[in-house]
Length: 284
Image 1 (cartoon, one colour):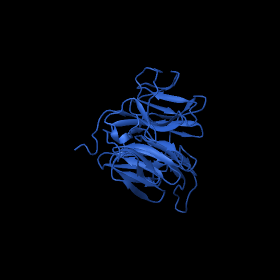
Image 2 (cartoon, rainbow, N blue to C red; image 1 turned 90 degrees about the horizontal axis):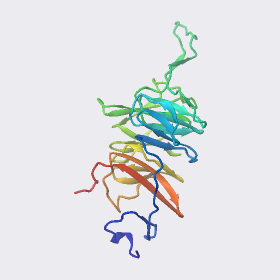
Image 3 (cartoon, rainbow, N blue to C red; image 1 turned 45 degrees about the vertical axis):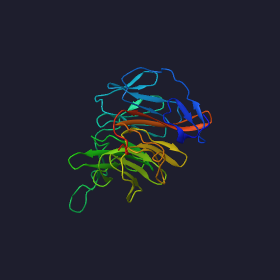
Image 4 (tube, helix red, strand yellow; image 1 turned 60 degrees about the horizontal axis):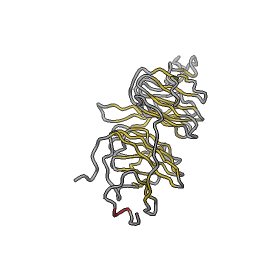
């Protein structure tokens, strides 16, 4: 109990403080049972939503939206509204749990205004593109990632400013090599995680932060001025980019992850829950 962490061979069900002190972790009790594919909590922790293969549910088990696809669900919160999307199903959950559509018919602005040659100068906006999955809100726009396997690249579409249902597919996008698995909002940049690298998108350029990938899932969380997230090499932070666990431990990263910061007992810890799979980066 008095030796520091470097003496540990195995540490199950214990908390380790910043000073290396050990204590038993808290227990837990069963809250819900079900075939859940993903979950999301609002920033103020007053509401939580669960996705099953058939419905979006409140934490109390009320079905508030029927799904047509069991694909993994992604979430984003803007002004107390929770947006969800899995490539096929999408919507917006209001604070009273009412759900409205996010994807709809294209909208034309300025239609009927003719130029000198008679062409229609109105701008045709699409709504959320079908086939997108990972979503995020950053600096007044909504971002949605669409992976194209044949080119092994992802197009990240972004909406009009403060018009989250308006997407100009002719100009409002940027491309990223590989498959995007995470979009996380930092004040200085949108952190873009793919299956092979980590990037920072600042609006006019895309900078490489790490030459390894981010595990799919809903696992980013905000820690003051940093974003914490789970990668194939453990827990990382940005910005500036830093790997927080690489020098201490190497674990199988999982094929999908959930994660969040847990504050309890005067301590702050990042908790990750992994769907088993993958290999430690230094297994050999």
